[in-house]
Image (cartoon, rainbow, N blue to C red; front, side, top):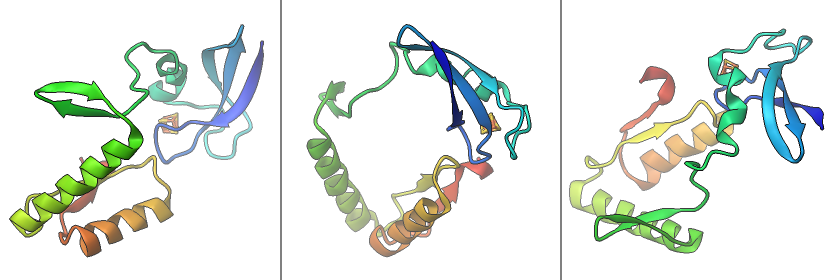
Length: 133
Ligand code: SF4
């Protein structure tokens, strides 16, 4: 049983919070009063961040739709399939068939790499960020 100081992963604000643990399970979250970003505050997502950790609905492995059914697969197969399909769609639609949404959960560097990948590899300017959804 104890509290662990960590950073909320839901968005780029990076609020500080404590995760409460009991008997090997995360049971709650509370704000860090002295965190320089959040200063004792959390939004509703931060207060409930512990709830997804043990959710039975959480995806824990990649899935590929086969014959209309989402089927568990390996990361190697999922990544190969994704690369193959993105290449096929890019070539068939001259990049117009692909749109990419980046995430506030990513670092600046990851967002930079994603726009580079989108423009240089996928050959499209169809890239945006979840902050504008
Ligand atoms: S508590 Fe809310 S505002 Fe703070 S990082 Fe988490 S999601 Fe973002």
